[in-house]
Amino acid sequence: MFLRGVALRETGPVIRGAGIHLRTPTMADHAAWAALREESRAFLAPWEPIWAADELTRAAFRRRLKRYARDLRDDVGYPFLVFREMDGALLGGLTLAYVRRGVTQSCSLGYWMGAQHAGRGIMTAAVKAVLPFAFGTLRLHRVEAACLPSNAASIRLLEKVGFRREGYARRYLCINGDWRDHLLFGLVADDLREGAPTALAADAGWPVLVEAGSSR
Image 1 (tube, rainbow, N blue to C red):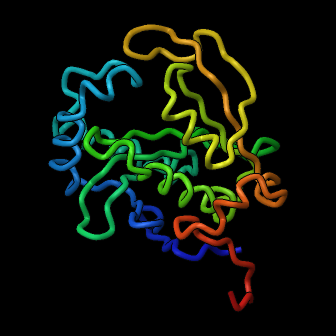
Image 2: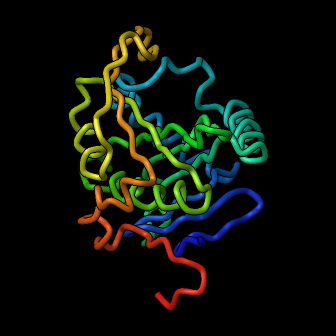
């Protein structure tokens, strides 16, 4: 299989969706990334681990990129920033983390959105764009996600894209300084074949998995 709309580079893939594209971060992104994160701090804090004191510095960002490069090289994580296609503005970020091979063939999905861009369907487009990459190019069987029970927007997003609610994990992650319960969601490759997100497949934002040799 190959994925229409995805270009592979040494630094990672570039994925295009509905009005957005996703690519691996570089040092040139630091200023925009730090500015968006800083102006969105109050919006993001309830849903994220406590930030380090030097969270937004160039040195911390450089360390982050080194970790990303190791993850890409070792096939354990695929980090992306989300940009508006029209003008290249940074909108948020998305990661396929903790890639596990062997009998599992799975990963964990995480994402964040700049406060000024939230509620506009942008992250829905980004998740829709990255899932065929996960199942097609990476040949994963399962994508997992977890969110706080109070995060209604994230629950709506996951369910809209086709994730199924699978469980409840007590004190699952340390968020904003406290161990918090999380809802657990999952999407498996069979869901695509069985039509779980069939309605979404017709949307402009859902890249199409194409069999080799197909004329589509």
